[in-house]
View 1 (cartoon, rainbow, N blue to C red):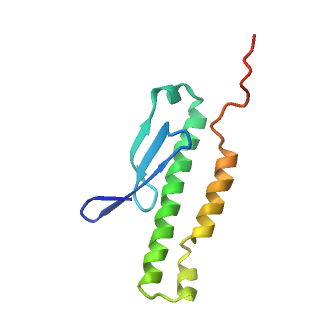
View 2: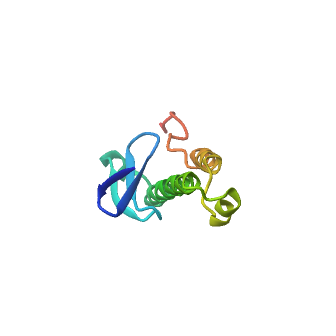
Length: 113
């Protein structure tokens, strides 16, 4: 999290390889995207899916932090449940599933001869 601008909270997420990173608003709208040159050779749809996944990841983490802030302010658990904000368990589970689904490692180290 980075609070560099008054009133605007930024959230970040980075691919496992570190080659792609995004900065987003709390809602997951991108404020900045960083992509290493080698990643630009990827399939455009795959690259776009990875950027979108990272934006969603940042938004989920922001929602989790917002939920924690509300809980610390004394909002009852039943009211927190109504907000739809993710729990830490929800975020961890979602990130694990997405990491398995959007693997950035090559399918094979073998190359066609």
